[in-house]
Length: 77
Image 1 (cartoon, rainbow, N blue to C red):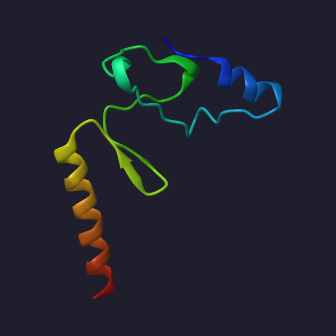
Image 2 (cartoon, one colour):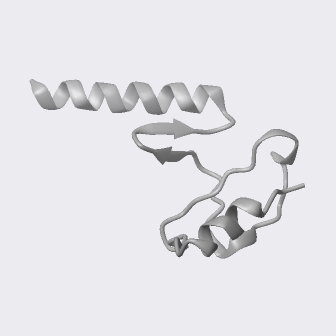
């Protein structure tokens, strides 16, 4: 079950979620949930936040990290 208290807390002090930019990812026992609450995006592909990829697929995670680092190295030479 989702705890909605943090959403209520944000609204009470005037903070709002930018639903056009926000992406969600289910974790734990809700991982396979098809529910898409709050009007935000719930993508199937990995989510990148603050330079870190989040995904359930470990192989894909390593590929993304490797490709990004390789591209960065190529740009320096």
